[in-house]
Image 1 (spheres, rainbow, N blue to C red):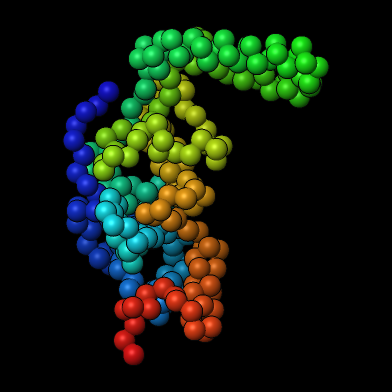
Image 2: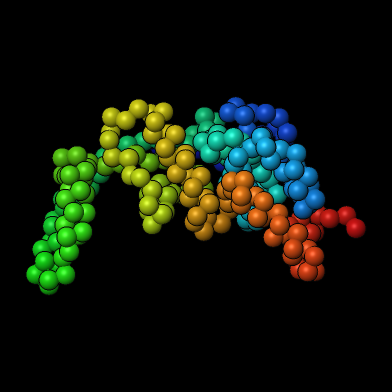
Length: 233
């Protein structure tokens, strides 16, 4: 397992309004008008974005900081300062690090099937799913999984991706590094969009349009809105 101490990404400088590796752009948009103006100018160029949210101790982006790009991977790599921050990928060898829990996983899986059969609640679909999972994840083939490592500020590698979102688990230890990194970065972008990860939120074109409409409606109603405290009146 890698143990290199990571640099906190938020302190790694990103030049503003300059095209970076992968074609991303970092920008500070402190008012709703600035956000809308930027998006109107670049909507046809950027398909994805990541927004920094209010946080007492930000690790990646501060409030009103954005990264825009044409791919999910490029946006995530910029936000994480990939290649500079120390954040990386590793294969977690579960079978060797925790052999007892590795063995228990398969025993529990079989025991659950037997129990449901005895109760008469095991369906044909349950059996089909069981056989498919057993074929993919046997004691010989399911030895561990790929994950991010060297995450900053106390973020846990085991909890980085929300498993409830149905992310693909990468269990082949012989996958190429680039394939692994690309898949985990895409999954990370989707997780920022779907989960309650408080510091960051990712967007596609549709959600950017929706976000701006929402804040404009809130402003029209006299409610709090994006960048209100920065608006010069």
